[in-house]
Length: 240
Image 1 (cartoon, helix red, strand yellow):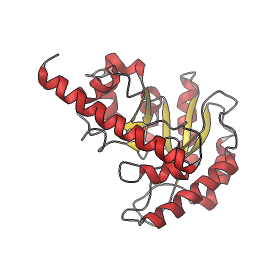
Image 2 (cartoon, rainbow, N blue to C red):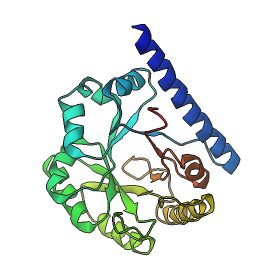
Image 3 (tube, helix red, strand yellow):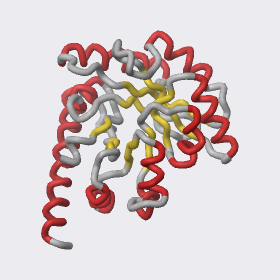
Image 4 (cartoon, rainbow, N blue to C red):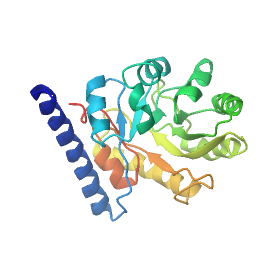
């Protein structure tokens, strides 16, 4: 391996070890099991960086927010040879006209925010003979640009999704308000955790899929993990 590549690999693994160390410390401080997984947000990362971390065994779950970009990278492109080594999560806002391609491309869809899109995902999953695990997106802020269902609506949407045959609701994801203070973050994360505990009291669904509360990104993952997130989405701090 060339010197420059070895240096980059060392830096990436150092980033990963720092992140996982901080997550472990946050779990210990909160008195919760160290069962948190890192979802590596690879949408803006260099393909070579992603390859290095997958080959080193660091990345086991990856997140992309654009269906076509993910297909070009992971299905036919530079990361296709490593595709079987990761669980690929769709973490963007899914449009109905992209549901078929998303079901074909991804292992998880983490941003279900309406019954309409869930029904489309279910229909295409059924056509492929596939069971698709999904997360419901909670709207944790007042931004008109932010997708998701309000915490008050979450239970109703979950109940309707559980009637569909080819998707399995496995938890909630949420994006914290931009510019929120630590106290504000703690409050919204605690609210999401309360809803998650109410609706997903078991560790796994009967189908065998793990239940996830996916909160926290590079700037706030420690607070999110302390609050109970077990699938923070980390990109910029990992690939710095």
